[in-house]
Length: 242
Image (tube, rainbow, N blue to C red; front, side, top):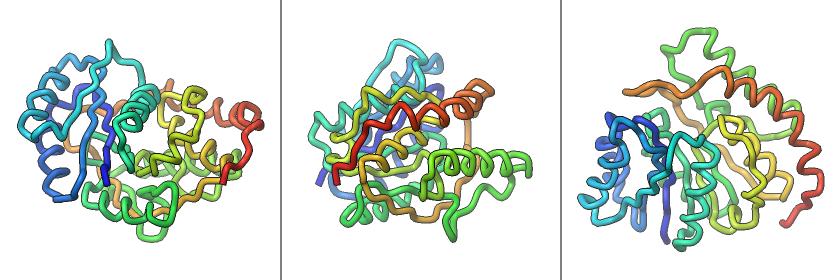
C-alpha cells in the first residue's frame, strides 16, 4: 500500500527538516512525501532535494515557477501522485499545525470511507488554545458560512488535513477546481459530496505554526465569501457515482 502526502511549500525552510523527520519516524510502510514548492526564495526547494537523498528518495519534489497558489499546488500534486501509483493520497500543511501522528489513523479510516478528515470541529477537536478570540470566531464563522450555503454535513469544511482514496480523486473533475486559498478545501469537499463519496472525521488539535509566516490574507477570505455562492450553479451537473 503506497501512501503519498502532498505538502505545498512557500518559504518553509525552517520547518522542513523536522517535518520530514517526524513524518518518517511514524514507521508507516509505503509512506512517501511529495513536496510542491513554489520557487521559495528562502531555498525550501533546494533543501527538499537534499532531504530526498537522505530519505532514500521517499521524498519527491515538484518545482514550480513561482507562487501559483495552494489550489493549483494540490491539484498538480494529486495528479502526480495518482500517476505514480499511490493508493492513498494525503494533504497537510508544512507548518506543524496538523498533528502528524494522526496520519496512520486517517489511513485506517479509508478502509471504510472515501475521504478522511482531521477535524477541528467534531467532538474532541480543538483550535490552538493561544489563538485570540477574534481569530477563533473568524475560523468558526467561515466554516459555518460555507457549510450553511452549500448544505454540507461535514463539520470541518475548511480544514486542510485529509487523506483520499486514489479512486476518489481520480473520479473527480480536478481540472474544474478553481479556488486557490482555503476555499479550495471547501470546493473539493463539495464536489466529492455531489459525487456521492463518503466522509469521516477524526478529532485533531490544530496548533499555531512553529516557524514561518501565515499565508492567510484578505484576498483569500474574499475569494471564499464569493465563491461559496458560485459552487452550487457551477457543479449542478454532477451526479453521484457511488
